[in-house]
Length: 614
Picture 1: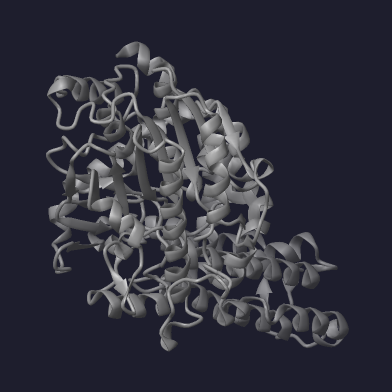
Picture 2 (picture 1 turned 30 degrees about the horizontal axis):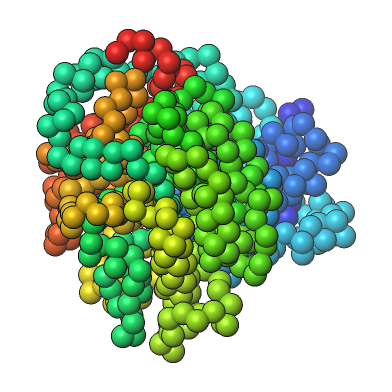
């Protein structure tokens, strides 16, 4: 007699709840082209899991089935919270970073919406219900039962495979968007597929050769050597977006001190964009100092921290510079303590080197950070490279009321927008005081001071922030405005006042700095370009917007979430009018190639080998 699975009412209840959660899940991750087929595939997976659990654990199958359902519910919850901030699904590669979650607890709490708890709200009462009423419900079954034989399992898989191979686009959509397929493929690609294989090098050697032959004599470049032999002080400002520059709120300048820098001896890039991977702030550091794209298979400092690099700190060290990084936080966060020596920093000043005053957000306030850093700078041999990372303006932008900053309108109190303006205004004041201290200590005149933002502060996908920002800016708040960060080169006594609107990204930082400092490094492998001498701008993206997305001097392309190029969205940056995506295919392919080359370099630790080829 064939073995049969008796379907209890609890089975129906759990499957029904899973379907409801699946529907909610696909809405949260913003499936643009319908999620009906995805939900059917998820249901097929789930039903097959139920059958497999019965066959493997017939006596305790209901408890195991509930445990599986609970586990999947927790994964859904984590996915939607992660998507809320990063606008993409998380990877199993990030498990190694869970030890750092404590430091961003307040940000996580802010991201969790009430509706997110729906994924978990039924687990405790359902678990208690199953334990107490298991015997009653196990006897209530449906007579028309499923057959638990190989042919039943085969039928389910055939149905699933039929859906999978309707067309290639749907396969891609499953891998990118269907809940279980995505996580299974992610585990496969993270742990198995790329363990022994190599990825395409995208013609790396010929690309570097072509780039070298297209170069011009260094001395003939615009602004070459304008900051030659000066100290280099780089300030990477937490969450600083470009929209705050030269703008008022409630009759008060948001960034009066940064605005003052622009009025004398400065070059300001106002179409400069973040370019992050999985490492957020640490990736902004990595890209800026190395002119390489960040990793997407983990934090770059953690995954590739032991690689050989020849970025900005190393180049300057060979020019006789002393190099140091400054960050008033835990040195192990983002693996900085281990990564910085390989990046070329002689010294890392972290929380143990500062006296903690007021505790705001992550810890040391920006005022304390800059004030105490002056002493460290004075102790450094000149010329020096000081790379400084601020903290106070970190999400969710909580600043005590006793700090004298921008007074908010009533409608902006207790909003992310209002809190953001207050913390940025505070950080701007801290930078202003720092510059005055540099003048008093005789470090200002012989330095080039560079300021840029690490990444966005206000997400265009956060409904409240999007609404307020759209009203405040008078335009639709989209990815181009969200990712735009300021880049300021301040060279005291240079006599240059310029706003450059070429499109650039953090990958262009290093070559732009080296040109200003009069250093023509033949050894450095830089995938970016010197923005002061570039004829056109281009910025490739792979985080928040999917890989293949880009900005150029005119157009923005957001790659479709289902991975199908034809379903993507493009628009003119100046007037936000739509663009036919077919006109973007060439630059879409360019974006993939540029990121692919960098990925090949990182995974194969090729910096030293490529240097020998040049």
